[in-house]
Amino acid sequence: CDRLVVTTEPLADLYRRFAADVRVVPNHLEAWRWQGLKSLRRQGRRPRVGWAGAEQHHGDLEWLAPVVRGLASEVDWVFMGMCPAELRPYVAEFHDPVPFDAYPAKLASLNLDLAIAPLEVHPFNECKSDLRILEYGALGWPVVATDIHPYRGKPVTLLPNEQGRWVEAIRERVHDLDALAAEGDRLKAWVLR
Image 1 (cartoon, rainbow, N blue to C red):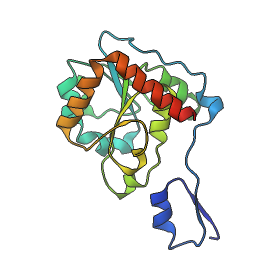
Image 2: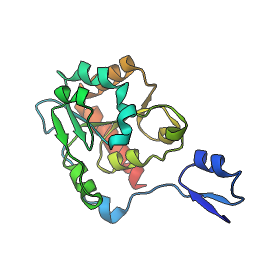
Image 3: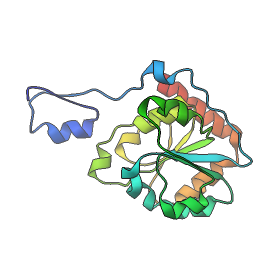
């Protein structure tokens, strides 16, 4: 082809040998679809910590299972789209996938206090965009995420995929909901900029 347009620099690096003109156009959210959505904080008897994703993210959650189990008595886990069977007993709410046009409003309705963005570290995920961070941030949710290329440089908490570190980071955040809300506000301001 004469020109290839990709969403991330790692993809551009990967495909430059196939096309002389590779352009990076980062993902953005459609303002008309995301602005004006309201997601409420402190809506549960315990802090609401959640994740949204599809079936292809099973591997991204597999290593996280002990974290979900270990914090199930301290937070209300909320999953949308997919939840591995082994995690269902520890999840307070599970929401089925919805059509694309209904996704932003449904996501907002989860009313999370904290969102998580775990990714397995491998070449495919290194080439992904930061779309999940943008979505969570547009709703004012603070994020704990895997320290991986698409999430670096964003105002989120980055961690290696070590279960103990995730338990510690989530526990620390949900015990100071005011500071957690401030993290979410900072991420939302960054997304809007």
